[in-house]
Amino acid sequence: IQYIISIHIPIILTVLTPLALGWRYPAIFTPLHIIFLELIMGPTCSIIYENEPMEENTMQQRPRPFTTTFFNWKELSTSIFQGLMITLGTLGTYRYAIHHGADEATTRTMVFVSLITANIFLTLVNRSFFYSLLTVITYKNNMVPFIIAITTMVAAALISWPPFAVFFGFSTISSSALLFSITTGFVSVAWFEVVKLKIRYDHRN
Image (cartoon, rainbow, N blue to C red; front, side):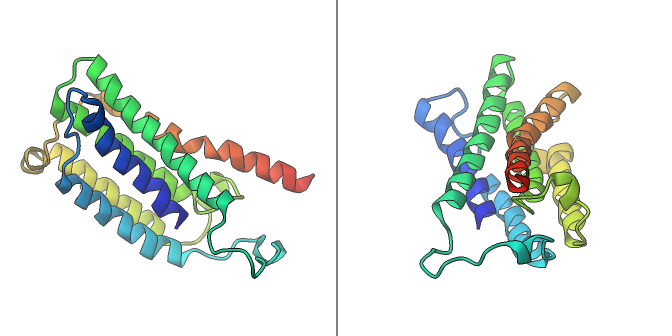
């Protein structure tokens, strides 16, 4: 559930912000792009997370009180903040592209790459809200590399194969623009590893 909230916030705000503020390319994402993003997020929730193994510290955690709701404020606020940080990444990519004179197709492609990258790393980072990314990637879940590989290949095909690129309004971007978009998407999620580091430190002390 936390993943769903975190990834939907940037999708909604990335669509609404350029439109509401009258930016140069207000329709940066169309319903077609939203449908594709939903098709990516569905398998992530239903396949990856449902096949996750139990964490080592699960039995050491106190059970939830009966008065506690399924989703408490701390978890909700974490998801919201993660979503807002990803939004900063996508909108920052948008403004970066505009600043460098990118056309609409290039801007859309860069924002899309940034969001897809953030989604991939959010999937990995949120596999645990305690252990580091380097630890969780060792968890045995064969669906993780499979879903990520499919997502990456399909996204690459949409951008690089002309019939798909034209249909979705994408364009081939330079290596520097691609690197910027991927880096921005990664950083917009990776900051949470610092939070988890503090959680582990507090737990040990």
